[in-house]
Length: 178
Image (cartoon, rainbow, N blue to C red):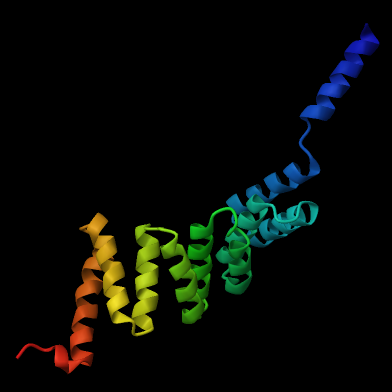
C-alpha cells in the first residue's frame, strides 16, 4: 500500500509539473513584467526553439523587442502572427515600420489591417499619421473621420483633421472658393 501511494504521488508530480516549455515561457513573462526585455526576448526565443511557430512566444518576443525599439526584428515576429490574427499582426507590424521611419511598409501593413476591418482608434490615428506624412491627405482625412465617427471627442482626430483639410486647400489653390 505504501509503495502504491508513493508511485501514485510520483505519477501525480510528473503529470502536474510544468513542461520545460511552460517553465521557460513563464520565465519570459516574469522577465517582461520586471522590465527585463532582453532576458524576456531570450526566453521567448528559447520557447520558439522548442516549439517553432508558437504564437504566444512570437507575441512575447515581439513585445519584448518592441520595448527595446528593435523595430525590424519586432515587425518580423508580429508578421509571424498573421495566420492567427491578421488584422492585429499587420497593425503592430505597421507600427514597428512607422517607428523605423519606413512609411511605405507601414502604410502597406496598415492597409492590410484596415481591410481586415480593424477600427481601433489608436490604429486609425497611426495609419492617418503615416498617410499624412506620405502627403496622402484625402486618405488621412478619411481615417481621422472614421475615428470621429465612433469617438466624436477624440482630441488628436479633432485637431489633425482640420489641419489636413487646410493643408489640402493650401497645396491645391484650385480648391479655394471664388
